[in-house]
Length: 318
Image 1: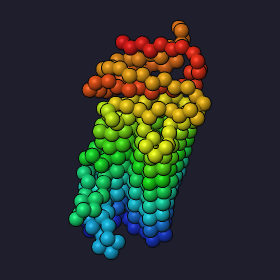
Image 2: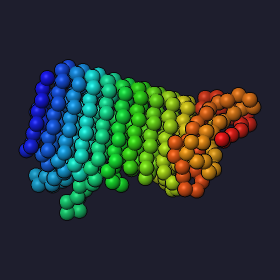
Image 3: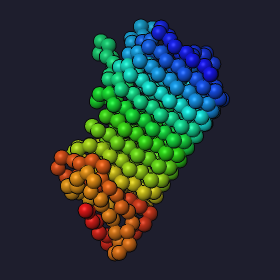
Image 4: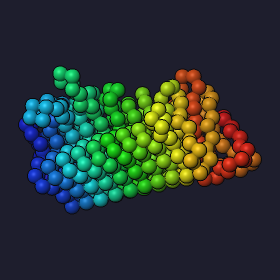
């Protein structure tokens, strides 16, 4: 059992790498831009139970001429989660649960992240609170992940400055800003995904959004925000080839002609608690119960392997 309390620096700091194979690690730091686990190299979690609490707000780094926030995990290289339990809570302005400057790979294990801080600002530079922020590609192939980011308008749940690929596990995100955001392509290949944004898009890809498998429910907020959003303004699109997805928002990105699995877009006023049923004749393909109400018309996008191009379907509500 390792217990660390820090008021003027990181909790546990390494130059080359931090590898957690087991045991119980509890770290709490109140330092400005303090990290629970900080490594100039990689951080790998293979087992054990690690709890990281940061309460310090961000600060301006005069050496790098940039603003930085606190984080449970902070690595200048890659982050890998192969097993065990990881719990992160950040309450300071600009704070994050996991921050990786290169790639991140979540293969297994349990991750719980809560961030409550607002945006940290210093002379025009800002550092926004995020649940998971990765500057390179983020790959989720397994594990049980829950992220809650409840700060201000910049608080995103999961963000990658490159591509995001989800091919397994369970991922649930609740955020103010985009629940899951990729600055490049977003791939949904398998697994269970739940995304809920209170003020923006459920799933937001600044490249193409590929729906290839798995089960996804994504809630955006009222128009013009979407349940699922690809960067159509720059020529990107939603491309569906498999999986079951329900996207709900004030609008939606429409699947492109490159999609090989059909989808249905439906607009209507549906209150929270209302159940929608998508039927082909007497056969039920999908049943979905609304968890929020919208001001005005909500836009739904349904896709499922049971849909066939050219067939007729009915949507019932009640």
